Every structure is written in C-alpha cells, then in structure tokens.
Image 1 (tube, helix red, strand yellow):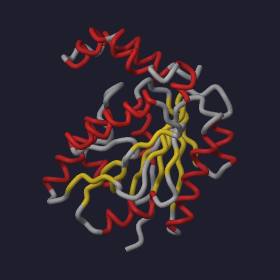
Image 2 (cartoon, rainbow, N blue to C red):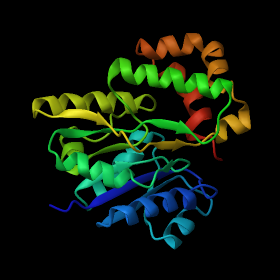
Image 3 (cartoon, rainbow, N blue to C red):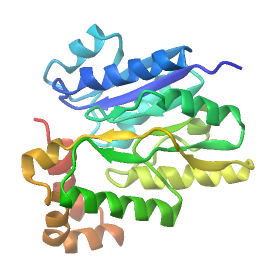
Image 4 (tube, rainbow, N blue to C red):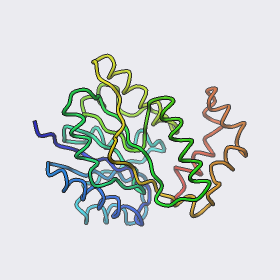
Length: 244
C-alpha cells in the first residue's frame, strides 16, 4: 500500500519562517515520491503568512483559538490523506523524514510517534537543554517535536489533548496508550530529526528557559498541580503572543 501524507503546520504571524518550513517539507516529499499535501493553519495571523504559504503550494485554513492543540486539530481533522505529520512553522524536517515515517507505519508495529530534536545552532546552554530533552525522552519513551500517526489514530484519541501547554506530552501518552490497546508501540525516528528553531534564544538569550524556570518556579508548580490559570500570562508571552 502506498500511503498518502498530510503535513500540518500551525502558524501565528510566521511570514519570516513559513517558506523555509514548507521548503523542508517539499524536499522530504520529493524524497518520498508519494502523495503529500501541506496544510498551514493560520492562527490569528495579521501578516503575510497565508499569502506566502499559498504561493508555495500549501493549503491554508484559518483558526482564531488561543490554544495550540485546537490549532493543530483544525489541520488534522481537515486533512485528506492517510498519515498525519505535524511540525511547527519555525522548525524544519530533514529530507528523509516522510519516507522513514511511512516505512514505520507500513510495518504495522507502530501506532505513531515522534522525532529526535536538534537545534539549528548550539551553545553550552542549548547543549545542556538538548541533554535534558534526550534524558526525558529515554526516561519516558515519549519523543515529541514532529508527531506522526495515521489519521484514523489521531481521530481515535480525539486529536491533540486540549491543553494550552504540555499538550505534546499528554498527546504522546494518549497515542501510546491507544497503540498498546492495538498491539502497537509509540516510536521515535532513528535516521531523521526535527531541526529546532533558536529564534527565541536569539531574541531573549540562550539561558531563556533556565531563567524562566527560576523566575516562574511557583507558577510552574501550580500548573503541574492543576492550577492552569496561574500560567496563562506566561504561556501568552512565550507562545500565543510571541509574534505580534
């Protein structure tokens, strides 16, 4: 069976990055050789993101939610292909990503999974960040960044978990649980990876997340304990209002 693929790209005012993300998907699609559609979900965009996406061959849909899970889900549930792949607009995928995903799905051993993450540049703080992420992945068995699964599997778990942050981890848990019920496992790509943008570090310094963890320790603990309101302002600054 030749699988078709939908790549879903959520975007909030990403006119500087949308073309390079689409270009990376195109290169990966060419390497695969099968049917691939690209869906850019424009979330509250006031710039030229939609125009640039269309000019580069993407299908554009619009979303006004302030919740990344809902933005991704709009793309997932409007997708027309067999396999869903998600990638954030400021990031890129490596050339063999789609081919490796399809090969894993074809084995019928994987319900879906994620991909390793590599920064587009490195410094000591970013290297330490990398080590922490890799440790967390090995500890939990859950990799994120690029998500991939058959559309039917995403539909079965209700799409991405409806959370404003840490939705990726919760979604990975749900996908893994669903896979176990079907005798399949949650996987991580071996030969390809997510090229992670460093733009926030470029703007705010490479110690950004270490600094935020110290400054917002109480807020983070409250969020972990279930008080999501305490973290709303922080999430808005970091994610939902970052590109005004």
